Image 1 (cartoon, rainbow, N blue to C red):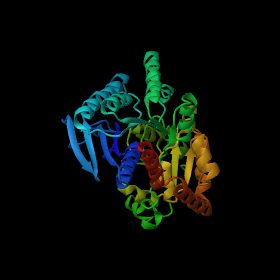
Image 2 (cartoon, rainbow, N blue to C red):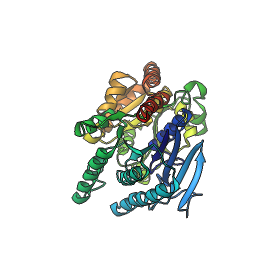
Image 3 (cartoon, one colour):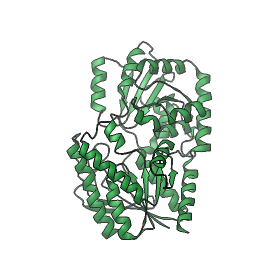
Image 4 (tube, one colour):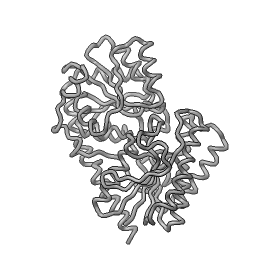
Length: 409
């Protein structure tokens, strides 16, 4: 079985899609599949091509046994829709050229969306190479782009919607990262097979028994009895991270409660400026940490904060940071409605929920957990058990391999 994964985002970049796809590739390869990657020169999230990849039109490398072919991509750190589209379509064209002339014929092409436009390259390659197209949806486009205000042109939105439905029709299999995505596509495409391919964690790697829960905390100047509320990930518009600063302002008299924000993204400088104007000192910013360091970081915090803006669009979202936090026995404070709340708060009972964008509610939930050590332990234990039973990446990959094997036969 030969599988080509086509994605704009891949390690050494850090991020949910990058980690998920690389882990899936390694696990499928370990089961006997021939897996290769076609991706862009790494640049995300700072929108600057990494050292060692600049001024290259093509680069072939191997990361942890996986063959990776990279093609040029236009990169500019700008919020302009024009530059954003140039970024997307430059890789559509260069990935198509690289795929046609530098990749061997696969049995399957798994295309990661968004960006939706990469499906153009995937479709053409699947026809030329005689491969079956698997379209993997981690975020519904153009719906999310419209509701987040990323694309306002009615013409572009209309063309994107037509492209979306075209790609669904031409796919041999559609996979969705959440049950909400699967249900949405199944309703619109009743004749198509849509498979739930969720994110997850590696309980053997994210194992709290293997890490010192004071090491990172003490190295970074926090006291052993500080109550650390942790957010780690992209500092973007969708997360609505202003809610953290506003909640921190309400809790500034509680000297032992500290908010830790780790990551990079388009809103980082704005958030730091907002913190300085507010004059609060119970929020600390850190740069992104290497993936291998994250278990040690999580071991040292008390709870993980999972915020998203209050939009109907996000009721089907399951942020990937949930799984690793729970695997490390860290309860979550969840600011996401819908599927995530149903799974992790109502079913698993491994955290507490606050109303998205409601900083007063968030402050109240932080205060509640900071004073209840027994509850913290119980929620953390329930979270790790739930992830082991339902979101172990090994189980997810084994299930997907079985589906691909059946399709081959």
